[in-house]
Length: 249
Image (cartoon, rainbow, N blue to C red; front, top):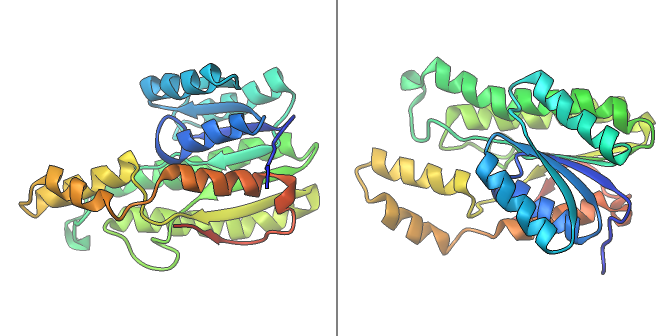
């Protein structure tokens, strides 16, 4: 099936690396105009170059999803420069405090993860929906099996991703009448900087070689590009009958 996103405008948060970057590249290949934001300027420029060199149309904007005004500006850029938002993917995320027991977990670490993963998603929804309601669209919020089906190596990460799932279940009922379809996306273990960083940090905490731990883990981790292809289908009109949570490898 040749999935196309021609004439669609997509906004993606956290698209400098990992799932977000793979999705921005895949969306552009499918014909979408992509506006993406990330705090990682260097990675953002690399993603942008990949898209442009392949003939795609995209714009990168430095964005800290914990700052509401910056998230609002990202959405406004898509509206002003490309005429609206048809697709929103909330991919910005961090994992901090792996393998730290609850009684040792620092409140500041917990807050920092919630701010990016959950509050960042809230800000994106808050400022994209008023634009999207003019013509409808699709919102894809990246959560995880952690906090939805089971636990995590991080107390904060599981809490934030469970929160994203609850946020989507609440908001999807509010926007259904606006012709906006929403999904919680729960990827499995993927070879992303976030996952590999968690593996390395946990290995160091256990007194093991982080490089060896990463090398061993790569054999069982999936490719973010595979999830990006799923997200391309879900963003397309071909997925109009899809509903609810989507779990991937």
